[in-house]
Length: 245
Image 1 (spheres, helix red, strand yellow):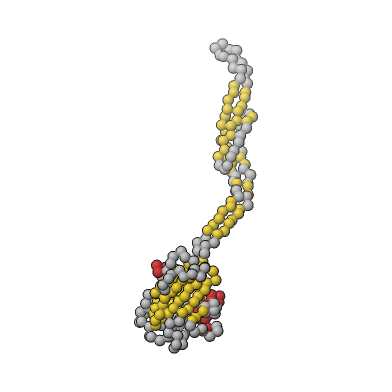
Image 2 (cartoon, one colour):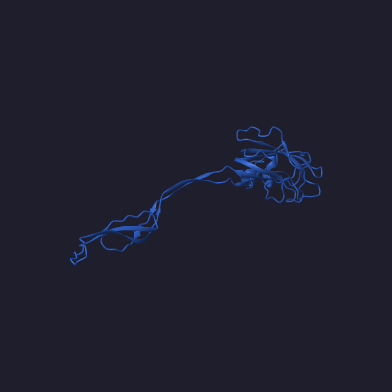
């Protein structure tokens, strides 16, 4: 997301010559005017302090968002949360063609230290397309805030399991989970002995019968887990930050 919002823009500092009070909010990428420097400020340095450390993905100084945008090239120094320089030498942006305002001076992710938290960015304008002081300057900084985690707890909820079966006799059955249940029933019966010739008397018969039964039910168990959110992109220069430039 855009790293330069109102809060960030209010804290932007410009050297060597400070801007008039309230002028720094025009650094926001939504500004249609941008910031224009006086004739003696040919290579100003713009210092952007982030509210919290973020991974910077790109830094762009567009020319086509303001009528007089003329930044051709700039260089950047990144600082870690402890205040130390991440890159010893400033990183030079690509050069914006004089006659093509749609191709701005920028640093992309391949030119920026990756996976490194940044708390401060110093942007020094090196040259302009017309040789004049920088005009219509807006800051388009895409950054990624630090990833956060969430822990979610689910209250246990249980539903009774029901089943039905038919049969005669006595028996016991158990069921676990949800779905088809098999119940085993043991029956006992007795028959009157036959005394006819050629038949063997039968005194008792024992056996077991499987009776199919269906049932349904569900159980929800407590769940506790941690979800990691991917980092969210942010615009570094908003109104608040620009006011401190």
